[in-house]
Length: 455
Ligand SMILES: Cc1cc2nc3c(=O)[nH]c(=O)nc-3n(C[C@H](O)[C@H](O)[C@H](O)COP(=O)(O)OP(=O)(O)OC[C@H]3O[C@@H](n4cnc5c(N)ncnc54)[C@H](O)[C@@H]3O)c2cc1C
Image 1 (cartoon, rainbow, N blue to C red):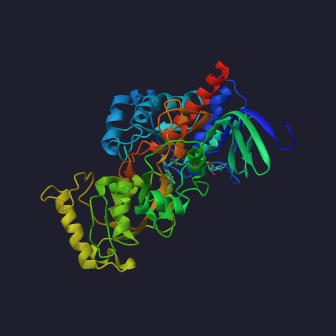
Image 2 (cartoon, rainbow, N blue to C red):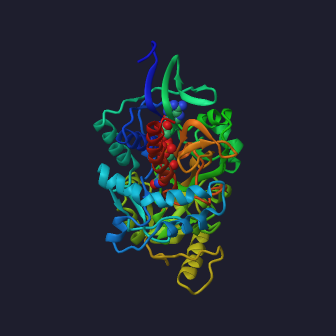
Image 3 (tube, rainbow, N blue to C red):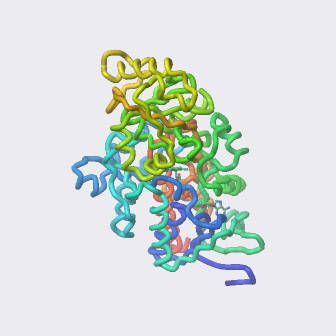
C-alpha cells in the first residue's frame, strides 16, 4: 500500500472473465506482481455463461485424432465467414496462437478441456474446437480461478473501476471509488457493450430490440476510457447473436439440432430463411420474422444433442414437445397444422435430394426428418458485441494511426474482434474466447517483457 486507500502492483487486470484471468496467470508466471479487480460480486462474466469452446488449429489433440489442420486453414475459414474487416492482422495472430493457447490451458495449466469431435460448428470446416467436457464455460472459469488461487494472485470483487489514472498521456493504473490502484501496466478485460442498451442502439441498431443473454457487467465503459486517450475503434457494428434461445426456459437450444437437420419455422408454420447461415448469422432473420420461432427436428437429432448437458437440462425442463403427426405438432403453440405439414413435406423433399430448397439450404445431415418430431419454442438473443478498442499484435491499445497508448492493453470483448465489420454473420464459433484468452495471454507476457526492458 502507498497512501491510505492506494495500492500498487506491476500489472493491473480490470475484469475477471476469461481474458483477465488468463492474462493474470500469464503475467504472474512471467514474474510480475498482479492484481485483478472485478465489478460484479463474482468473477466469470460472459466467459462463465459460454460453452467454453476455443479453436486450436493444429493442436496435438487434433493430431492424435487424425485431423490435419493448421493456422492457415483456420485463417481461411475465419476470413470466409467474416470477410474483410478492421482487424485482419489479428485474425492471423489469433489463428497462430490458437493451438499453443489450448495446449497451454490443458497441458501446462491443467484445464479440463477436450477436442470436440461430435460437431464442427459455425465457421469451421473441420473439428477444431476445444471445450470443457461439460460444454460449460463455468468449468473453464472455475479452472482459471483455481490457477489464480494457486498462485495467490489477489482478486477483488465488487470493485468497479470508474476510470484510469493518466499522467502525460501514459496510463498508470485505475480509480475505484476514492481509491487509486497504481500499476506499471493496465489491462482492460472488461468485455464489450452488449449490456448497455444505448451503446447497442448506437452501434448495432439491427439487434437493439433483442434480449441480451450475457452477463450484466458488459457495459462498455472501457470504450469511453480508450476513446478519451485517442484510441482507435474497430468493427463496432459486429456482434454475436444467437438464433434459438429456448423460451421461457432461457437455455440455449443447441445449434446441433439445426446443423444435424432440424429447421426453424415461424408462428405461421412456414420457414423464413436459410438456417445454414448459422446460429449467429441467422439471429437477425429470426428477430425480423416475429417474437418467436420454433425449432423442429427428430429423435435421432435429439439423442445427439442430449449428450450436451445444457440441452439435456433444457429438455428436462419440458422445453421439447413431441408428436408423430406434423398436423398436431404445433398445437401447444397454436401453429396451423396444415402449414406445418406442408413445410415439413417440402423440406424433407429438398433434404432427400428430389427438389431444390427454396431458401438455398445445402446442409441437411440427418434430414429428411422422421416421426416422432420434436418442437421447441425459441427466441433470438444478443450474446456479445465484437467491436472495440484497436490493439496491435502485442494487445497494446493503439490510436487510429497505430501508436501505442503507453502502458495500456486490451483483450477479449473490450478489444476489436475478428468477426467481421458489421452484423452477426461474421462470427465463427470460438471467436469470443479465442480473442479473450488469446489476447489476455499475449498482454500478460508483453507487459512482463516491457517491465523487464524498463519500458
Ligand atoms: C451464452 C453465451 C455463449 C457463448 N459461447 C461462446 C463459446 O462457446 N465460445 C466463444 O468463443 N465465445 C462464446 N461466447 C462469447 C464469450 O463468452 C465472450 O466473447 C468472452 O467470454 C469474452 O471474454 P472477456 O474476458 O472479454 O469478458 P467477460 O468474460 O464478460 O469478463 C469481463 C469481466 O469484466 C468485468 N467488468 C466490466 N466492467 C468492469 C469495470 N468497470 N470494473 C471492473 N470489472 C469490470 C465484468 O463484470 C466481467 O466479469 C458466448 C457468450 C454467451 C453470452
